[in-house]
Length: 165
Image 1 (cartoon, rainbow, N blue to C red):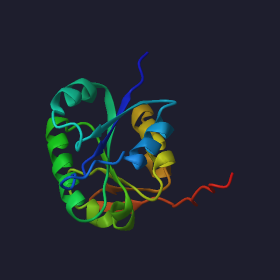
Image 2 (spheres, helix red, strand yellow):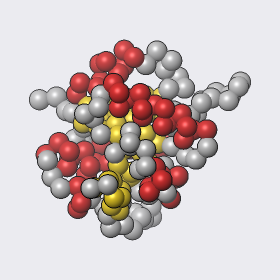
Image 3 (cartoon, rainbow, N blue to C red):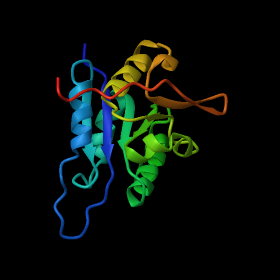
């Protein structure tokens, strides 16, 4: 049986005459997901014709992750999330990155964002994909924020992993 897909989207615009750098954060997330899921990174800076990718990936996608920071990238990320939600309203959208981690209550005011991954997202994203695929409770997933009955719920926070081990 084919693995379900997780679409990871990078929306930062390229500055004039600057080569885009690889979306390293999304590459870490993809590595964490790869054992159970088929992660697909869509870098909108380098994929101007993204619709064929979306048509191929979305039918088998369990969730969409968008990494963002505050400022111009947040605006582009929200526009992408709105577009993706219109295209595939049944697929949950997760925001992660510095700003969503610091202000999940603000990010979750946007109806196109279903979840916020707080701090490092590798374990959170895998657990959320598992919960959505296997119909498990999301309230047990650490480092996650979401809306429930109109209120923002923030689950318990885990300590960061030691990079020395």
